Length: 303
Image 1 (cartoon, rainbow, N blue to C red):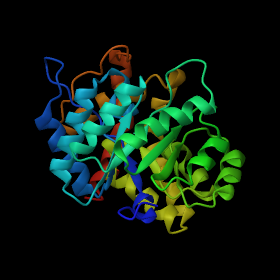
Image 2 (image 1 turned 30 degrees about the vertical axis):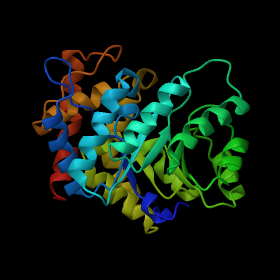
Image 3 (image 1 turned 135 degrees about the horizontal axis):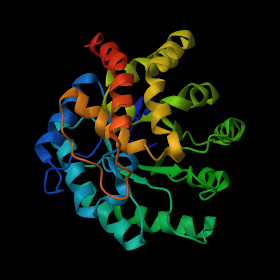
């Protein structure tokens, strides 16, 4: 574990902030800052700006740097900010350098978009980028590569601090966690829907997109599970699940669109998601309004 980063700091909710766009499809920095301030005031302390639910695949490297910079400016020095990196190795390397200079604590390798992958190629890619920045590093596992074997090998690197694990096979996850002798933090990368089972199997925290609209509920759910109060944790999860179940529809294709509309119900305008994310019908917007009503009421009770 990095001397400047304690494992306990990662044992919380890792928020993936929505990205606010203005009418010209540029990042709305004022709205982004206000949203980040709201998340911080709710208690969020680990941020993944520009990652999946932030529309990573539709953002330029320069926009990811902008998001990191505004997140650091708003939250101050105490928060952990991991910048997502991916695509061509030289793009990932330069993005990592620029994001660290903009205030990121470390980097998170996004799942590979490349075909014909191998552990050997993945390891060389990772090390090329890590050697350029020498900072705390998270690895995002959502497919066969990187394998658990490679992740356990990388665990011996002092820059490796954790894994965002999104392959929802609990026995495989538990076996891998038990095999780790270097103290990586194994984070549930599949949000509130799977978090209880990951935490029972050894995860100390989980990522969240729903936390954009109900950050206090998400943090309260984590606190309950972290304290071993599973009855309370499952009660809160039941409140949040309508969001996660809706986002998971049609092959997770509502992941971003649902939240982009839901956040308008809090009075914030983030603009529509960029193509090729799906647009919502009037009927779908009505469904979201209905399911969000009790969730926003429960969130308000925690303010």
